[in-house]
Structures are given as structure tokens and as C-alpha cells.
Amino acid sequence: MSNFLYRHRYYISRRLLQITILTLYFGANAYGWKIAVGDLSSSLIFNFIPLSDPFATLQMFFAGAIIATDVLIGVGIILFIYGVIGGRFFCSWVCPVNIITETALWLRRVLNLQEKENAIAFSKNIRYWVIIVSLGLSFIFSLTAFDMISPIGIAHRGIIFGFGFGWFFLLAIFLFDLFSQRYGWCGHICPLGGFNAIIGKYSLVKVVHDKERCLYSMECFKVCPEIQVLDMVGKKSKAITGAECIKCGHCIEVCPNDAFKVSIVSLAEQIKG
Amino acid sequence: MENLDNQKRRLFLQKIMQGVGYGAFGIIAWSSYLSQSQAKSIFLRPPGALSEKKFVSTCIRSGMCVQACPYDALKLSTISDNISIGTPYFIPREEACHLCPDIPCANACPTQALDLQSFIADNKSSINNARMGLATINTATCLAYLGLQCTMCIRACPLADTAIVLHNERNPRTDMHAFLKPVVVPDYCTGCGMCERACPTKVASIRVLPLSISSGDIGEHYIVGWRDEDEGRLDNVSTDVTLERTKRNEKSALDNVNDTDGILKGLYDE
Picture 1: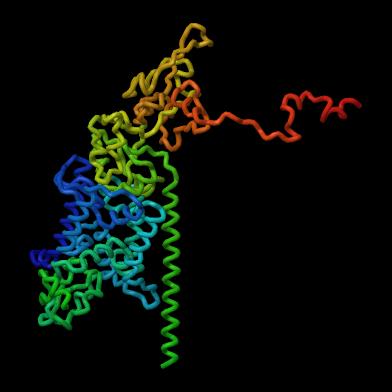
Picture 2: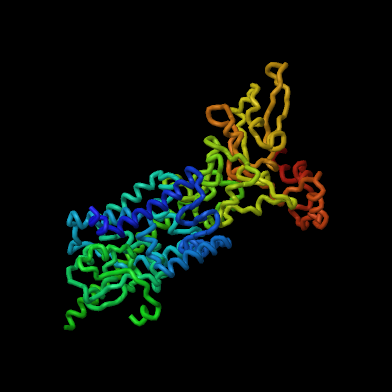
């Protein structure tokens, strides 16, 4: 049993953190707790620290809204956190949609629903185009275009304030991820993930690969949601510097010989490669 | 080798066209959803909300106003509501705005989409300056207008005798009773919805509508002569309305009508 817990230590901590954060927000709405008020778009921690979503704020800017000081401070704090521990930390440790898409990813592996030869392959770069389209549509329609359709917003607001028909949207993403594209929403389309990846490109906390310990079992490739970041595995001992790494720690858990570990990697080292 | 390059080029172009196709489809679907959500909503926004267009772009959808509302009147819209998703609204018939003097919802707003400045009039900030909507009365179903005694709306109104006043009129049907007709005064109505919530008819006979739908505008072209500031607008206006004289309008209009010797002559003489 303890071995099982150890083998899933990152998975369990991530789920615990996701559920704790959502519970705090839910409690703020339902019972008036003051620990984390608001939701993942913008919130107030301990009635004092403002936090705001940088991507939503950028869309507001494009929509022509006047941005309040509190929001700017909140964006600054978030940019600092993402800059240090990595933007896509949000994706695997906070975002509630991650629970849905990773479940689909796991089911896909268990049910052996592999990629078919003739399937439409989505590019991993679609998300960066969606960022541009989001900002363009925000400008044209004077509203925050992505937040209007964001399943992340639907999920966390649904849990905190009530779903409406929003759950149907989440079911659609689950089925899309399960049957159409491997890690389809989070790994290809979601512009928030792409935006966070750009912010956290040179974050200090990275997963580091040790070539000397690699047994070429390919276990990491089976579980990694963003396989393109594992290009150095078995070839070179270096940090995973690909911005799209979501720092889920899955590779660390499955590696039979502990060839991965979390470490702080200086900027100079990252640029040198 | 050349053949292979050619094939690669075809594949590359094909991929690009595929991308354009999917992209166009996605953007059209997305845009149509966005433009549909811009349709005028008949939901009421919390006090201090900016104009709907500005509100939708400024609201960050944090839901903090909803959490701050002590009466749980405010709700966040979901994807099934025909309203910009994740933005706050309230339905008076379920729970109306209680006009808290400390305005917790607007104070909680991180983006000033609920604008605290909008409550200031004459250097004093007051929730009574909120304009969420305007109460409108359907006089065909209002009990008071039918001649029954009701006064529920005026009793519920936080600004009773100011925002809603009673007009007493003789009831000609019985010749011995009075109508106590409620009348909304638009200058003072905050649109809080307390009257709508209190109305005892099956469907409320007094309803708060958003200002974008219910408010009127007299316009520049009417002058209310008994208001000094309105009358003053006439001071610099030229009152000369003389037309250029031509052969067709040299006589006055009245003269033309009575002109049996002119146009009409041939018609009646025969």
C-alpha cells in the first residue's frame, strides 16, 4: 500500500491541491469563508492578496476595458509565481479540467485506444493560434472572447456557483480526449495552457533528466501528456526546458530507475542547454 | 527525388488548407456564439454596473460580488442562461436587491465593473443613487388600478413615497371608494426589485426592466416651456421661419383652402 502511495505521490498531491483550492472557493460562496474568495479568474486570498488571471486580463485590455489597480497587482503576483515555478504548473496542480482530461488520458491508455493511422492529427501549436484568435475576437466583440467559452471557467464556476448545462461542455471535452485526440484539449487547443507555457518558459523549477540512470524502458513516453518535451530522454542529461511541460511529475513516478527529479535550474544553464 | 519533393509540397499545401478549413469553421462558430451573447439581456445587473457593453468587457467573472451579497440575491450566469457567461445578475421575483448601505457587492469587485463612483451624487455616496433598472406597472393587472386595496409595492419599496407614490382618485364605478394607484417616479427608482418581489398577482404587475429597455429620452427637439433651463435654450435660437416666396406659396395655406376661384373653380361650377 505504501508503495502504491509512493508511486502516485505526485498524482495524489496534485489532486489534493486541486480539490483543496476548489473547496476553499466553494466554502467562500457557500459558508462565507475568507481564505480564498472569488474564483480562478480573479480572487482575494486572506482578504488581502489579490490574484488575477493574466490571460483574462490581457483579453480585457484588448476588449478596451479600463483595468483596475487591484487586478494589475494580482496579475503581477501570478506572473511572478509562474515565472518561478513554471506557468503550466497551473495546468496540472490547480486547473479542474485537468482532472477530466487526465482521466481520459488514463482511460485511453488502459483501453488501448491508440492513435489510428488515418486519424486527423492536431498540431501541438494550435493553442498559440487560438491565443491570437482570442485576442482578435476580444478586440472585435469588446468582450473577453476565450473566457466566454472557456471550459476551465465553466468547470470552476460550475463547482463554486452551480453548473447549469455547463457539464455538457465538459463531457464533450472528455469524449474528445478519449476518442479523438490524445490529451486533445489541454495539449493542443487550450490557449490558457499555451499562454502559461509562454510565461513559464524560463521558470526556475524544472524536471531534470539523468541519462546515466535511463534504462530505455520508455515508460515516461507512455504517460507523458506533452511527449515533445521529452526529446532528450536517453540521449542527454539535462533539464526538461520545453515550455509545454506541465510539471505533473508523472515521468518521475513511472520511471523504474529514478532518472527524473525536480530541481532548480538557473537561467544561464537553461539557455546554454 | 524530384517526384518526392513534389509530393511533399502537395502534402504541405494540403495540410495548410486543412488548417485554414478547421480554423475558419472554429472561428465562425465561436464568433456567432459571441455575437449572440451580445443580444440585449433582460436580466438585472448588480448596483453600480457599467453600461452593458462596458460591463461585459470589464467583468473578470470572479464571482466575488455573488459571494459578498449577504442576501444571496446575486447569481452567476451559466452557459444555459442567455447572458454573457459567468457574469452576475439577479431575478427580483426570487430575491431582490436589499440596497445594503455599505454596498458589499460593488466593494468586492476587483475590476470596478461595479463602479463605486456611480453612487456619488452631490459629493455624497449613497446606494440610493444606484440605477439597476426602472419599475414599470401593468395597469391592466395591478390590483390597485382595478380598485382593490393593495399597496404591497409601496410598502416594500425602500424609498416609499419617493420612488413610488400613491395617487388617490375617485372610483366612478362605486362612486364611494377611491383608487390608491401606485406611480413610479423614475428620478428616484433604483430598480432594486423589492416591489416586484412583493407584488401579490400571479405574475408580477410591477416589474423592473433594465434601463436600456425601459428608460425614455425626451430628446433635444422638445422644449418644456415651464422649466427655466429648457426655456433658456431658446435664447440664442433664431425664430425667423419665413420661407422663400415663390409663386406656389405666395398666398397663405388658409387662403389656398378657401380659394374657390383658384384651383377648385372649374370643378364645382359645372
